[in-house]
Length: 169
Image 1 (cartoon, rainbow, N blue to C red):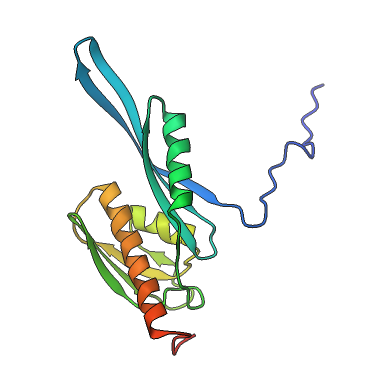
Image 2 (image 1 turned 90 degrees about the vertical axis):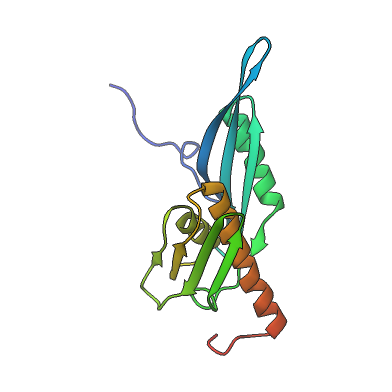
């Protein structure tokens, strides 16, 4: 009879301060060359600690695994601090990046993340539990990720300019 018991070495224990990595998109890139087609892969990854820090990375490599690994390293280097008021963001923001426009608003406790696709992944990785978001412009996942990060960075910048705590903290 086979032994299917779980050993201590087999279980995955999440360390304190570990980062969650989410691959949003992997694209195959084909370039025409004299010798034939040259194929590479592009990966878009979001990394967050679910405690207010989040970052995104976009990288290319000859295989998918290397592209994802490079994107994760890039995302870790470019992490931003997201201010949280309880389980939501302190105030709303509308931001444009390239053709993408996004809108973020705080939401009452218990309402969850009401946002689509890439915005939901970023807010979840940042540790935001309640927020309302809308992607208004482009359908490009890359542009929407960077627009959402720009909106979160604007919220962080405005909170720092006002200094200290907000009224509803």
